[in-house]
Amino acid sequence: MNTEKFFDERTDQSEVKARIVQKYFYAWANVIMPTAQKNGRRIAYIDLYAGPGRYKDGAASTPLLVLQHAITDPKLSSMLVTLLNDSDGNKTSTLQEEIDKLPGIGSLKYKPAVSCGEIDEEAEKYFNQSKLVPSFSFIDPFGYKGLSLKIIKGVIKDWGCDCVFFFNYNRINAGIGNQAVAGHMDALFGKERADALRARLPGLSPELREALILEELAAEIKALGGTYVLPFTFRNSGGTRTSHKLIFVSKSFKGYSIMKDIMAKESSTEDQGVPSLAYSPADWSMPLLFSLQRPLDQLRASLLKEFAGQELSVAEIYERHSVDTPYVMKNYKESLTQLETEGKVGVRSLKGTRRKGTFADHLLVGFPASNSNGE
Image (cartoon, rainbow, N blue to C red; front, side):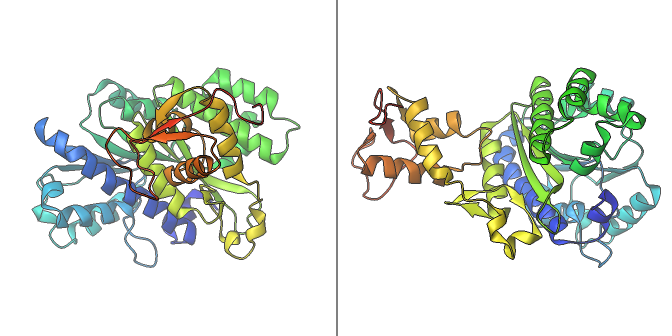
């Protein structure tokens, strides 16, 4: 699937993408608005690959849906600044026409700004040097020639700023070893990481290639200030290989946790309740493609080992252990409940009587210095 088709034709994958971005924007705005009201009273949605506003079947795409939501929310309509860009003048013209036709669009305090242009070094410089209001940005780093991850650094550097970007894995995987696009790869990963990938990728299996590319991408993002990096994978119609990814970047664990829950609900498979953080049309008809690795068994063993001899709250366990894993809070509570039932951890409450059958975030969990398996 190419980028053009992904945005212009409404497929299952594009609907999942849109839901993830929209759900997070709404959740993010609700968290950010109370504080933002005290400090400037503005928040922003930024889309640097906004498209024409509607799919070919007439359905609204994410920018229009964000604006429609804002129109119905009095608080958001008084605070939202919308910056929409595309490199195709025909698309931006159509997008502006579609925005102008939205019922109630005039009720927004800030008129949506639509621009046409490449996101180049000048734009990168602007975002890195300008102080942004709290913003949620959607970016396509491969869609613009030579765009580097420094644009990610620019749009997340200020308080309350998160982003999601579209990562065309097929093109990147093919491009790493292609000298014709070496400059693009160097810009995306940084030359040092790109060279390391060129040296290590040959001979690796497709699964290891994907893992290594994602690992280096995440490492570069973290080096640029993105504390939390969370990918969601889209697979081809046969479920046999990755086509592209949505990658979420934030400096906030709360944002990371919210997005993981959203991605978990959009996953097309799970194992022992642990989401795949992936979508494939094939998963509905070929569920065995998602191998049964019994991930909750692995989680319980990992908790006993990592927190041996410590006592922590459930919330602390989740924040310290869940990053860069597919596990969501309910997986931790199920695992801790099982460990408590087996007598492998102790649980106590500092807030009075514990309600039977519950595992609240504030409960303190005590882990033995070693477990019966000697781990």
